[in-house]
Amino acid sequence: DTEVTQTPKHLVMGMTNKKSLKCEQHMGHRAMYWYKQKAKKPPELMFVYSYEKLSINESVPSRFSPECPNSSLLNLHLHALQPEDSALYLCASRLTSGSGLSYNEQFFGPGTRLTVL
Amino acid sequence: KQEVTQIPAALSVPEGENLVLNCSFTDSAIYNLQWFRQDPGKGLTSLLLIQSSQREQTSGRLNASLDKSSGRSTLYIAASQPGDSATYLCAVRGAGSYQLTFGKGTKLSVIP
Image (tube, rainbow over all chains, first blue to last red; front, top):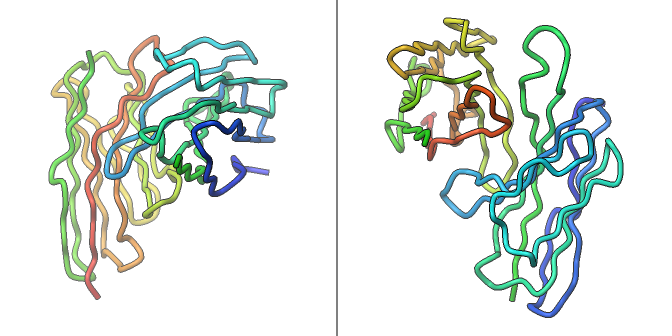
């Protein structure tokens, strides 16, 4: 298995809803990332988990809550979002050790298109 | 703070042409540089990764070069095809950092 999967592909939610985005990889990668991408903009880093511990939080509002329950799974819990949070949310992973180039390469999932009404 | 610039922002070429996409970065203390492709509304597909100690990497019709001292990378696409139409993003990982800093991308259209 050489891919990062994300569910759901699309999500529409109201500002009072609670929802979660899910990301999964079975490549043995121990670094996992959440990015947010607005239309016609590059991805912006939100969170980094390394060995299931949160290592970077790029000053993301608390209405976004990441969780890494195990080495294969990364969640992003959403609560009380604003319409401006509508974006493509991308998950990525990276092998953290090994020889050659492979451990440096970030692999991205297809993203979840989130719309907040 | 690292800044990554990609020129041009958009490029349209006829099928079969060879083309070059440019990426520049302000801080030469990088760990690696990665080129991605993104189709509309989709995730990113990694194309090539160049370590800071390397000069170039090749994959099929793609060749990426890196000149760390001048803060530049190029992505060369040979014999372009309509299926190459996408946005191409360059991203730099700083030395000692987990993070990628992305350019804004070059939107490529290959006309049949």
